[in-house]
Image 1 (cartoon, helix red, strand yellow):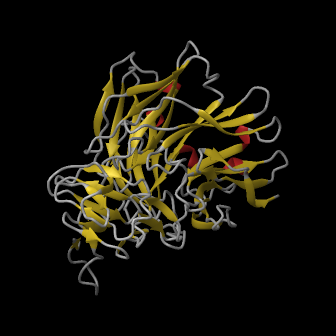
Image 2 (cartoon, rainbow, N blue to C red):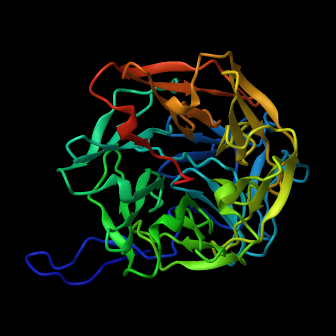
Image 3 (tube, rainbow, N blue to C red):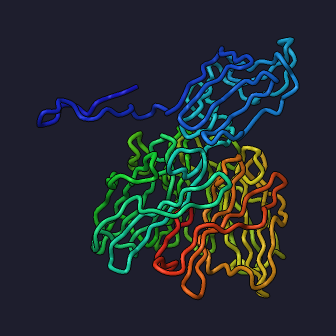
Length: 486
């Protein structure tokens, strides 16, 4: 559905059209739809096809398969979006079920979102299941994640650099996708995040800005298909004395399942209370007035001992919040705050716990779908005291909890220094598995981009370097953008 803001001055009678808020960008697949061999649906970022061999699959703009029902070898099979809300792949006999989404709800429907996710909704529009195939921070719409940084130049000018990817997941030479003259912005009073805030399949940037006089505001830089960013616009602001910039921790994700990434803020009150606030995104990529969901009284939670990540950990089409919490006795625990259909959060559920993990301080926490099962997992980079480093993967369950961890990659002492790296997780080669990407700053002042490609067995390939320079680019001034933890 399309609307217009009304008459404007000058020769133009009407402003630019925009989608009505609440409409999900993508292709709707209504109840009663049948897909037979060779038929497909397409959105801006993905294609859903019922193949002649019986496999229902999603492919990206990069031409790679992101997900399938793994039902190949069944010529004549068909996919049906049932009236009761279940997506089913039947054998040619029309009765034998090869695969189903195990969802229910009269008049349910599916949407192949412009961001690449296939999501099944009930009649109320609440997400029930997801393929987990949204390509995160794809800044040019080619079906592969890219990397971006906020660069704080020595002359006090600022830029957003785009590091677009090659088909093998390596990074191209960056370019300035947006820049402003000196003294336009102050990076020291900004907290950045990235996501697809208008749901068009192109990654955007958002930031909370804490003014010197105590005001706080939320800004959006919309991305375009060239990897560049439009001038920012402000959608939320409060006068001094309402919110404290320093007490806000910024995360992004599609918390209400509408196909647009939202912003969540963990607010650590001065009196010891804690709360989660959600700023749902509008179709223009701005944000609505925030609301609070989960709260904790003083003394119940120590936010300073949290490392936060976001992802769809239970595969229901809504991103959740997880925290890796370190206790004073040296033990560690993962808590999951599952997202509700409103975009708010349910009470925390604890799962994986360890008294022998090691140092919370030596752990950095990341999230992505590292095994291609449609649910995001957690990865921990552990920087050992003896100098060697390892990545551990914590696979998620259908309940969004975590019970085990395995080593996915390791390197001997002296090869990598974690404090010389800025990491961002994404599907950089477009194969449906999330990878590690990083900028690495060397002691001699040079900088290089690295990629750890994920493998189907929950491990990572040997890292590969790509773009790099010896002068003219400061690692300390490059703030790599990630969805969480700002």
